[in-house]
Length: 259
Image (cartoon, rainbow, N blue to C red; front, top):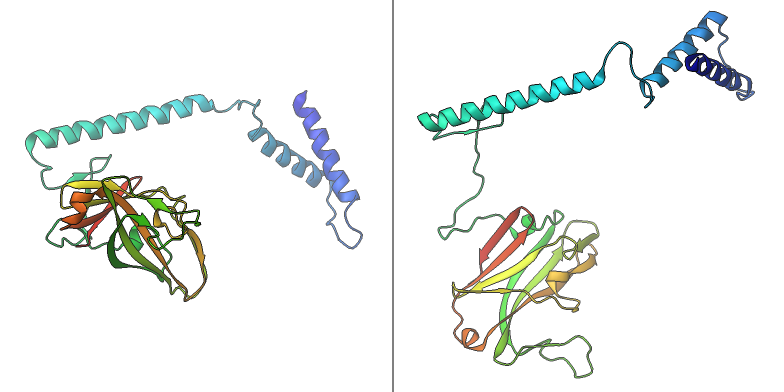
């Protein structure tokens, strides 16, 4: 009964389309048999996606269950093969995928001799091609900005017994077009390791040149300065030897020795 009503509804819709078509649009004439075929095809298409319709020819729940069972069986077989090869030592020099097939591992990083890789900071931060971050050096300060006026709103002062280690960078846009940078939304963690023993996390400030919260739009051929500010003990600051910058984001890490 429902199917008969559906056929009538679709046939009525087709008639309406034919009747209310634009005056300047020519619609091919169809015989009664052709109209019936179109209606049956449309009805069949609707029934295929009707949430309440259940095919009389195929029980889809059984098909899904069979596919799931096959997937589980394949995973169990692959795990069993991996365990066997591990016990016999067959896979000591190769990595297998979920199906137990060997996977070629390509190492595209370059060891600098100190455990650091040659990937650039720009690549890690996924900057647009043509954007360049250049390290300019560091300063030890009691406040930042150091020459700020007392009336300035955004000035940060080091805690008693502490000093600021300020890493200076320049960000240049040579991409040929304007580019938007938003490190704050990228969930990047900026840290540094000093003298191979002290690790500090960059301060999050309201300063416009704070790289850790940098949100800026750069025009082509525009360059700006930005900083990372770390608070370290005054004693460490007065005996600074090595600085290693460490960046982290979900699923990846990067580090570079600066001095």
